[in-house]
Length: 151
Image (cartoon, rainbow, N blue to C red; front, side, top):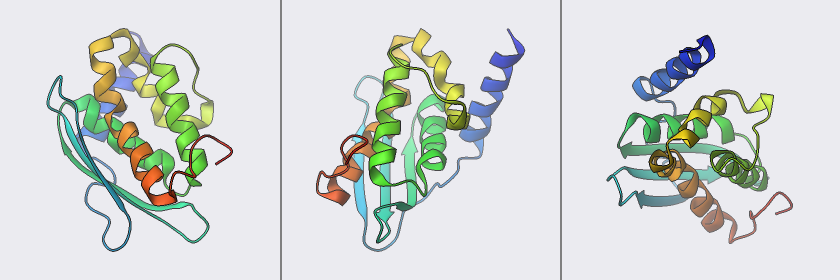
């Protein structure tokens, strides 16, 4: 195993054992519940946008494998403070990366730890569960205006 693989494994384990933004956003916001029927992973994602349309707060609860839970933790860290349209564009780029159609940028940070998942197609749904919930929650929160980078 290469040192890069070991680093990525450590990042995923850290996010799985010490998840960031675990919990529920209180008050007005958007909430989505999703389940991966192939393995039973679940996520309850809540978020709140500020007046400028940025993700002010995002939290998740869920159960499932280390990949789905680490991905949810990494996702919340990656999108917090971003405009809704930018978060949707990042979700699209992340999912394209897992399909082998795009590369992540250096500023995408811990997301790179999930690149190895694309070698295991059955696990891609685990890694994308939180991102699908994010897209649905943002569509609800913005009335569908957060689609694509131009949103």
